[in-house]
Length: 154
Image (cartoon, rainbow, N blue to C red):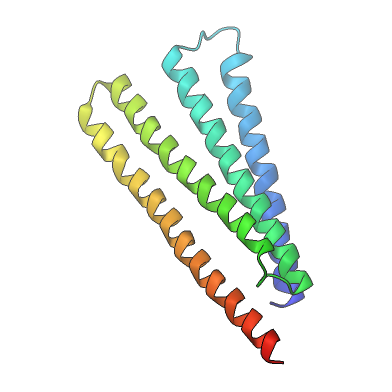
């Protein structure tokens, strides 16, 4: 990967991270610091799920940042990369569960059981992304194995 692309990705990750922090601050302020509006339990739960979801995005961004550091060092095809990819997979799995819970809460608020089923579809899609990243992890395992074999031959 060229240095320009790595720098561009780091800029995108930094801006995204700051954006997530800003949105989290606004969400928390809207619920807990607004004296005129008493937040209900459902609204507080939705905000809490959104904040935790943004934390998941931030964790994934930090993991990608760490993978970019490995790319810069030329050691991305090493066992050290597995830890960061595993964190990304777990984070996406947690996000899928949060989407499912959010669909349930919205379905209960609107008293529409169909919304719960509609909320299950995005949760399955997010879980599908976790499975896709898992497949890519398996490809990384193979690449590390090939790299180790090549080093042994040389």
